[in-house]
Amino acid sequence: MFVKICGITNLDDALTAVRYGADAVGFVFWRDSPRWIDPHKAQVISAMLPPFVTPVGVFVNQPIEYVNEVADVGRLGAVQLHGDEDVDFAARVHRPVLKAMSVAAAEDPSVDRTWPCSSTMLLLDAHDPVRRGGTGRTIDWTGASAVAARRRVLLAGGLTPGNVAAAIDQVAPFGIDVSSGVERAPGIKDSDKLQALFEAIHDSSDNAARPRQARILRRIWGTIRP
Image 1 (tube, rainbow, N blue to C red):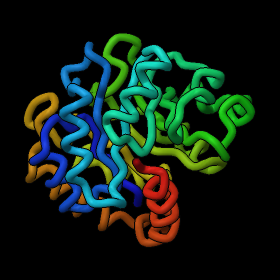
Image 2: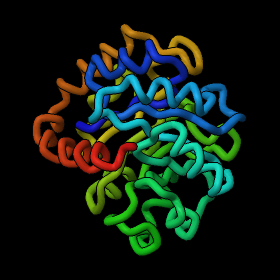
Image 3: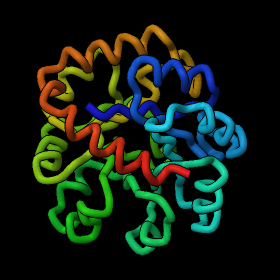
Image 4: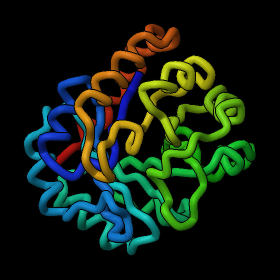
């Protein structure tokens, strides 16, 4: 199971997530988020990560020039678009793109034409036009399962050590994205919760079937990381 721990704001939390098995860590560069991090601080953390752990930058309706500049400064391996960005905007991003959207939006089959599976991975999260992400609200796992059956997705939205195994078993996503579910406070991770999360992931029945797919994505993202 590919695992991204998002909302990282300090090196200790990043290294703790990696120690337990994170494949990617997420930095939020949207200033309205309580998990915002300065790009230069993210650069320092990225430089300390193992080579096949992918730093991902989260952006919300920010200028393309800013997105690409921060991707360079922060040594990002991928960019997550968590606002209202369209496919033309994504095409101008100089990194692989994760596009966040609600289950209701992703269930529309036209999404596969607008956001082709070959170029974009979807991140399914709770819809919140104000907070955008990290809300702690779970999403419709039944609908998410239908989307995951036709394309690779990362499942987000209220995942915790207590529900992640059930979510994986029901949705069968390519990977998961967790933020508030492993925190003591916004932007501050809890080591015990991180450990419990990865233990629950390893216990999920779906996880054993997916190691090869996760290794493939690690290699793809790892090779383009600056």
